[in-house]
Image (tube, rainbow, N blue to C red; front, side, top):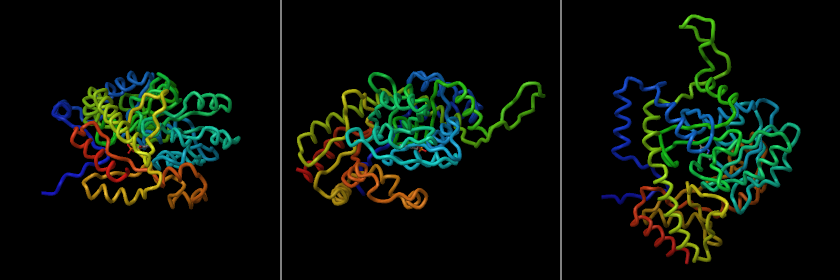
Length: 373
Ligand SMILES: *Cc1c(COP(=O)(O)O)cnc(C)c1O
């Protein structure tokens, strides 16, 4: 029998999730039904936002947020280079130009001083990422946004359940996006959501999610017309049913993630070779991932050795400016963003997910301690 690998992240699906999905399948509504609104309302309430729009995935959520923000040709949007490509792709989807920016080596989120230097007359928005589930510095970002009249978008794919100085992620930017991919805090298979307090943004995104088509007043009942450009970015009721059932376990999942993270911090804090992930006291961490850095050891060798012992780590992320597409598109190259490159060359995301049992956690600690001390 081949031994089961321990992945860096994985969903938790139990019989209550299966029951919830089965119930939807029996209900007569499998898409565009009432469960979607219930799911949206739960998330909006959890993150203290007025409005929520569920969509087909986190990338569609970012696209919808950029659309709502009115990003278009000639607009620049500042994006940290250390993130998943979708955080910058969404600007290109709308015809805007992503302006990449280095990270802060402490928070691993956007470097705010550098971001401010990149602001021009064309800058319309900043997309910040709460990297690993540790919030970006939203107080400073909000000051800058106010000073230069910019829209703030929070790519919070890592950060459902995170807080900045006591305020929930989802209540701090003009638009905040979440992902429900299986490795994220809760899953709908594929899924995403945008939250906002702005009614105008909300209405634009509701159209955008469904072809830009709506029923309008003073027409026969069958009549619908296209008002905005839109896509089919809808989520299904089947997925929303799973999302609602997962949502009931969100706090349990977050607590388990925090507990495992504490065990890692206790074990690896003692090892001089290892740099722990950011954990400033002003954030309530969501611990989406646990990325460590090695001061002198070769990350790739450690990756291979851990894989051989049954632990499948990951690297988050190849910085955006090192992807061939972006080098061609934006003319960026190696050396442009030293903080992100240094982090990237040394980082390794080790397994962290709520379904990890004590045996798995102990094994990860044991194997890494063996290699790094
Ligand atoms: C997961 C993720 C996304 C995209 O979400 P999908 O649901 O996979 O489309 C975007 N940004 C970041 C930072 C992510 O981690």
